[in-house]
Length: 97
Ligand SMILES: [Zn+2]
Image (cartoon, rainbow, N blue to C red; front, side):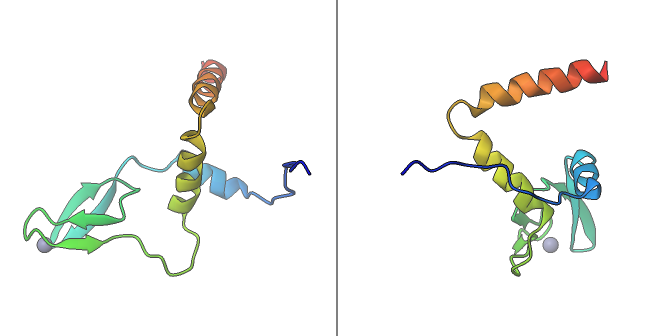
C-alpha cells in the first residue's frame, strides 16, 4: 500500500514563528566569569579560557526551539530540498522588497 503524507492539523503558534524569525545567529554562554558567543545550534561549547568542554543544550525530554531547526535542517539535507529552499528564499526576499 502506498503511504500518503497529509498536512497535519497543527496548531503552530504565531509566537513560535516570530521567535524563529528573530533568533540571533549566536548565543552567549558564560564560563570562568566570561561571556563568549557560540552557534545557537551547538550542543557543546569549549571555554576559551580554561578549555573545558561543556553542554549548553539540555535533552531533558523537552522539545526546544533548536529541535525545530534540527528537523528543518534534516529536511533540507534530502535530495532536491536545497533547490526548493533557494527558490522560496528568493520569493520571500522579493515580497520584502
Ligand atoms: Zn572556563
